[in-house]
Amino acid sequence: MDKITFTGILLYPRFSEYEISVLLSVLKQGRKQAIYIGLDNQVVRGESGLPCIPEASINEVDINRLESIVLPGVDDFAHLINHDALASFIHKMNDQNKIIAAISSAPYLLSISGVLDGKKYTTGLTAEQRTFLGTFKEESYINSPIVVDEYASDS
Image 1 (cartoon, helix red, strand yellow):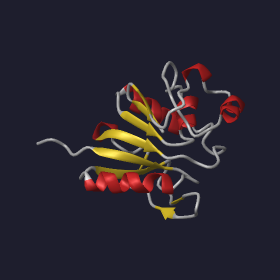
Image 2 (tube, rainbow, N blue to C red; image 1 turned 180 degrees about the vertical axis):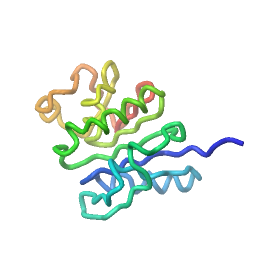
Image 3 (cartoon, rainbow, N blue to C red; image 1 turned 90 degrees about the horizontal axis):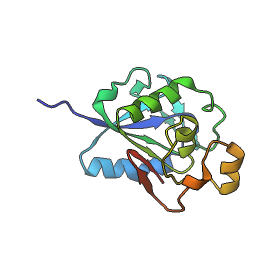
Image 4 (spheres, helix red, strand yellow; image 1 turned 90 degrees about the vertical axis):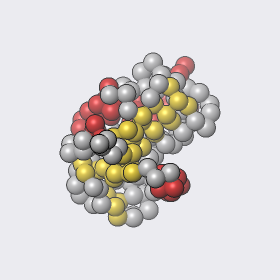
């Protein structure tokens, strides 16, 4: 009997709730299982203050049961920039060729993790913001609503 696989929805402080609301509805309609993953097991508050309870942490979740992961945008990255466990989790997903979807500003998390190296990408961040952050390769930027390169997808 096959094990059920999940789409992991990554929850971190100040994530953008509205960016995942339609996605969650589409997953439900398509009978796809979702699991809510936190940086730890603490309640996470999105950018509007909505409290969310992770079902697992990035250190606990069985990556073999994940077919994909969604990283919503965030209005402030300060608490995520040097988060080694998050970078390691993203690397493990990438190394196992799992689908990684990063919404709006979340491609920055892929960029600082090195996952965008050699890949085309898009992001909700402006050229000025990308230059300021200093981790994006401008020659790989595609001005498009969605970009898929290998297993990474950005919008």
